[in-house]
Image (cartoon, rainbow, N blue to C red):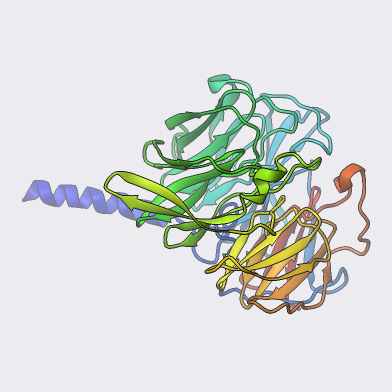
Length: 434
């Protein structure tokens, strides 16, 4: 009896420790939020802002970064790189209320690469919980820090597992579940998915993948009541067991799926997005790869099944989302496709104010599309094409530099209960109600 009580007490302590480290519903602790759906249904942000109204604060950032901001409590965590060869990786923390820089840490890069508009620059979004923040960089450096900026541990994945090979760097963000974090390193060199212990940084498991170029992120999806890591990446969609890294199922009849990440759509389903390359590469495969997939569990394992495909829609830099019964895809030119999530039928198409780097966010009764060049389009969620006024974060809306990547870009957004934290390459903004 005493042994049973002791075992129960240990289990209770472990459970409480895990739960106490988890973010709350008001947080945005990882890429596309805590549930990785890019949804904050109960939040109430403003529907109108201008450069002169509705901007609560603006902060200048050191270096340049493309990752999204994440929020736990009153702290915003960000990553960036600096130096002509991306010599240093930066992790910083700002106060949510004031925008004040609370701390900034710099780590030397383990893999130098040119710092220019054609390469990823701190593209992977970090993740966080109440124990601190976890940041991954395209140099292979993986670090963990406390909420006050103290270094908990560091890893050099290039040293441990091999050099990343690719012209444009890595882009996959960190996923997290309980006491583990997960990264995917898809590149022309050794590719793999791996799990790491949050407390120690030790590798909990590592599963090799075929070499491929992709910038999509691992996403958590509930299938049969249990979490799986689902990756849509350059020719396949794969599901892994987060406990041990075992490949559970594979679907390879896709193409052009190099950037958009999968989005959990509930009941064992998720959205897949794809787009042809800038010069038309993988155009035929991309036409067949914007879809809703369902994973069917059985005693023999798992079977992937396509519920519907959209032959019209494509998804470029931002991932598609599902909100209030409709899927929203945006293509490279900034054309929006609203699709009935049950049938796959296109409800309407519309041109947005800008093309989008950031994934749209479903909030309240609306879907927000943060355009690349500082303009945000807001649509009423649902089957009818109802637009609200276009909002601007800065006064000019010109496209700068080759391919439109050299000027300020709205790279990433994190909603708060009353607004949005928006990140450009060099600035951080809080949009809020007056």
